[in-house]
Image (cartoon, rainbow, N blue to C red; front, side):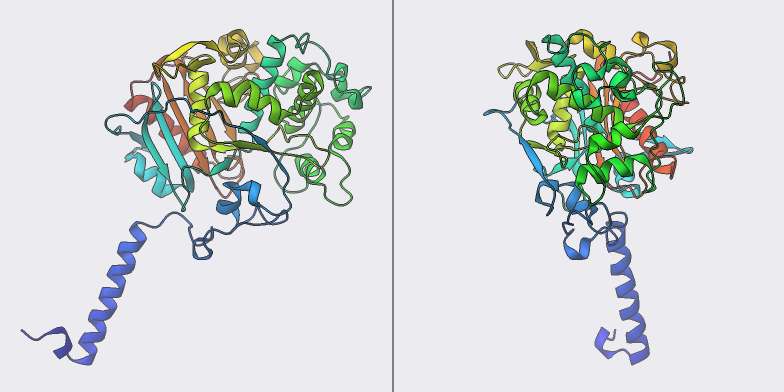
Amino acid sequence: MASFFDQRPRARCLQIALMVLAAWASASLHAEPDEQLLGKAQGYPLGNSGTWYSNPYRVGSWSAMDKVHGVQVRAVARPAEASPLPRAASPASIAYRYKGTGYALTDFLDHQRTTGLLVLKNGEIVAEHYRYGRKDDARFLSFSMAKSVTSLLLGKALSLGMIASLDDPAEKYVKELAGTPYGATTVRQLLRMSSGLTFTERYDGKDDIARLSRASAGAAGAGKPVDVLRSITDRHSAAGEKFVYASAETDVLGRVLTAAAGKNMAELTTEWLWQPMGAEHDAFWRISSDGQEQSFGGFNASLRDWARLGQLLANDGRAIDKATGKPGATQVLPLDYLLDATDPARQPPAFKPRKATPYFGYGYQFWLMPLRERTFAMQGIHGQTVYVQPSTGIVMVMTSVWEQASGKQDVQPYEERDALWRGVLQSLGGNLTPP
């Protein structure tokens, strides 16, 4: 038989083309979604204060905001020793169904722009994946998962008597809001995002969240964040009547918290959450131009520490005993507040699942799922998620760089994420029974 080099030029060219095509096809099987758009060829570069939100800077910036030029942060310190987060003896087999077709967890990673995904069962890692060149020490931007962190800190302040009552108006603590509609709104109404004030959040660059974000970043002519809060005066409903998503309400809560406690949010997160929880890595808050942490979206932490936080919630606020690796006697977060925050049964009718929204209910800055077993989520735009089902010990954490901010703009990633979570529950012995 003639060797490759003995073939005629045309046949040789054809074979070369076929070999190149085969190599390209093989490589494409392992490509991550939109990796070139997201900056793979440039090593997933960092942006600056003006470009970090855009492609191709999302992957690099959203996992290292403390290194983005022009962005100011405040550190949250880990303890000397991390709490156990052991790996299960064997990885879990996780399957899910989406639009009538069965998939494995790896298929989800091939479909969606996921930078990190971790699943726990009873405090053990049964799946852990990093994509787009990320590693386990990356501190991922949470966007609105930070709202749930703010709520947890506020609950702690309440338990310590720093906040007298959730029915206090915000202006009792935040003097800059005295005499304004947000100032007159109670802490409880803010926790449920039920101020009744019209704050637009369309993510089109022209809405109120864009104004608040520009002010927080110190953009020229944007004023101070409190100026934006004071300007919100139109009303769509009476206070306390219904849930309408508004990041401004969490910004107010952050200001209530720091005024009541007399410390900044990074200090409170370190003392009340990160160290007693047993975090593995330092975390950090992005801070606004006025020195206030961006409570509505600026917390950053490693995937494993997001999982530890999810496990702390699954343990109803109890820390892991380092000696046994099991939930111990130390109550890091107040149980009664956690239940008020995450239990659909404790919500008024307008805030229950399928009432607050067509699917989710809304507690104290947590999303509540329509299941018999208490199941809840922390969520942020572009696909950031921590799902928790305490009774079955299942936690799923996901960080992402989805193109569109919310499901209103592109529902497909959100639908498939929900399908994956249901598959995780089904695969690991969770409970999908409806209420």
